[in-house]
Length: 227
Ligand SMILES: Nc1ncnc2c1ncn2[C@@H]1O[C@H](COP(=O)(O)OP(=O)(O)OP(=O)(O)O)[C@@H](O)[C@H]1O
Ligand SMILES: [Mg+2]
Image (cartoon, rainbow, N blue to C red):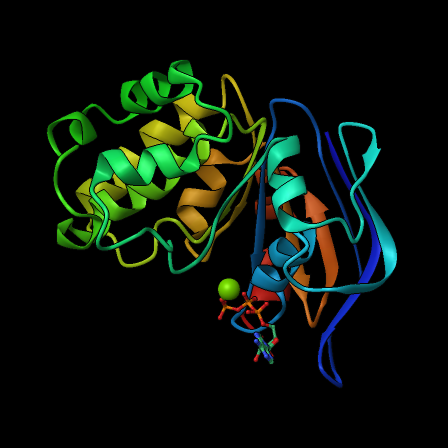
């Protein structure tokens, strides 16, 4: 579904990604792990065209999307939920979902509400009045509403209470039946539970790739995450 090949990216003069290569296959949940500041969020932004890449290629559903416009990339079917969620605080839940409809396709909105029945009760509330967990649900629901085949989720569990985190795990298991997911996570337990495959990033490049079992057996956590 998604192939990232040897991408380099920088913010101004400071290079952040030094040849990142990774792949997400159909129906796969792939987790990207790494310590603070190694370039996980930048990798997702580069895929979305929000950070310019200097070299390398990004292919989605067989099509080259390298250096394409972000809205075009989204339209091809990649839903992006950034670290800070970026929901519209002064719009209601219903309006937030409507904004995400690329072409009004009610089926996707219904689908989003099926994943998150709680949002049905909150449709008329403003985004800014929701709890952190509800905002995260809304952010993911918007990606579903956009009809994404691949979702990029940047640390969705961050700052959530354990109960809400459990709810998030349930939803990701549900989503996995229909979409591919690239998940950036700091929470190792969640990663080991959800991922089909795990990439570990160190200093702007992929240092390790393997199944959750291989991560545990190969002492990858000790090697790459506890420096
Ligand atoms: N807008 C920006 N301008 C300049 N430098 C940036 C910008 N955003 C990130 N960086 C730098 O790029 C590097 C990678 O950042 P990135 O946000 O991709 O890391 P991350 O792995 O997502 O970290 P975290 O776990 O803290 O979210 C860091 O050194 C960071 O300081
Ligand atoms: Mg980040």
